[in-house]
Length: 192
Image (spheres, rainbow, N blue to C red):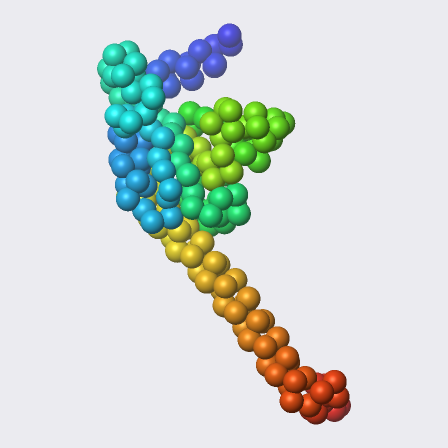
């Protein structure tokens, strides 16, 4: 190890405990908050009593339950993509343990080489999102999710309105054909 690398390691170790405390407190707060959000189907956090490994975590992890958890996004894979696209502060990347909060859609990234059955056996569904929570202020993280959820809902509403408008136009065309037969009573192009 070079002297510069050793110095950087020592500097980083000085604040490690404080950073770990922030990681774990942010993770607990964000997992609890996400459980209450209408766009979230489920949360799998080691600190929750319903987590399969909670008893072991309670026994061995005395200073918190870590900085990583998963949640299910209602709407599956496409909703997961919209969420990742809508987040501004939280970064979409397959990494862990950064000081910045990171989100990833495991079905299409870290587990993409597996068959669908293998992914499901590994506990990864199409709606599965993984968060590695950083040390940003918790209010900033919640705000980022709020605006991303709002963006997802606006995109969904716009898409639904477009489908509704297109079906309305098709219905009008059908009615015109019924009334006038196959001939087109009105020119659809505007003369130049």
